[in-house]
Image (tube, rainbow, N blue to C red; front, side):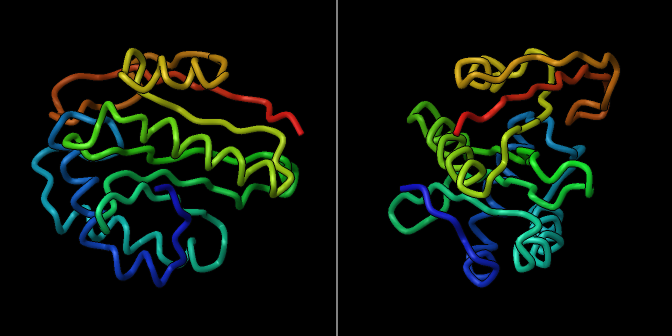
Length: 172
């Protein structure tokens, strides 16, 4: 089941959210963290987003199975004054033990529906070039705007990865 969490639900679910992020980073996800990475790093990340979720600057969508969060995606809605029509997809994560069930697709579809309901006409995101998520984004209708080589270190901190910027106009 995909649901949107409030800041209070997020606070209550910090252990699950931290477990998802931690497992994904250990699995090699390029989501802003370098190994070694422990649960306290993941917890600090989510705690740092609480105020954004509370204010509505960021929306938090969660895939729940058997009462536990197993996947997450966020939509950044607070944009500069000249971009009120745009939202940014951030941190699409599915715990490695729960992949290949369509949860990432469901999270994205729920996020997109919410963005449309908010009057957003454009979504943007970036992903590691060649990452497993890139074909999913393309399948969902995202187009490549460009690739930046040497954009960030991989999770092991040893190699520079490129990032692919993508966008999707949302139809009404």
